[in-house]
Length: 116
Length: 112
Image 1 (tube, each protein chain N blue to C red):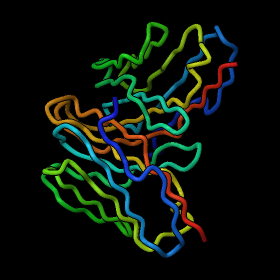
Image 2: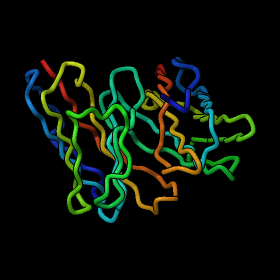
Image 3: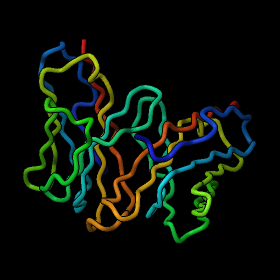
Image 4: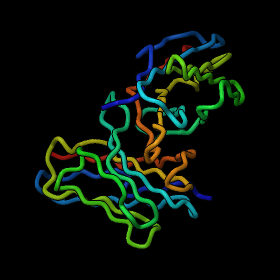
């Protein structure tokens, strides 16, 4: 069990460019979450997968954001046409359980995005 | 919107003292989790307490849950400088997808 892994850890990009973050959850975890966190705030929910199905998306997830989990294992979060307001830490988390159960959720170290 | 809110926003204590942080929430929950976050790092899970539990311990950590008051507390006993971090509570509402919702956190500074 190597924990939740996120890449890259840091990304600096110019406004208007696209960026993609990858998350490898803990093996055998069927649930995967993406959160965004800005300085001085708590993590804000973006989206959630149960296996390969994207079951919930926050209103924070604008049309420029897309997340996938094609085989129910790793996930990618892509931001198109980045804006300075997208600068934040993007956190991935995973857990194991049925849709109707609440279990411990484990977080990765996060991916820092700076849009200049 | 944020379901849980931690109090106080900031706490400064001396090494060896106890630190108490509180979390209040608005709707019925399935469980409540406490996390620690060091500056610039990811969140580390501390304790999960379910709605039918009232108290849990883990080492120097004690968590209580009062569902009638919709509140929880995290007590760190005999604090150490290494406990300096932000602490967050995350609530998972019952009857939904149990997606944890975080508050703004309590920033704890433990002076050596």
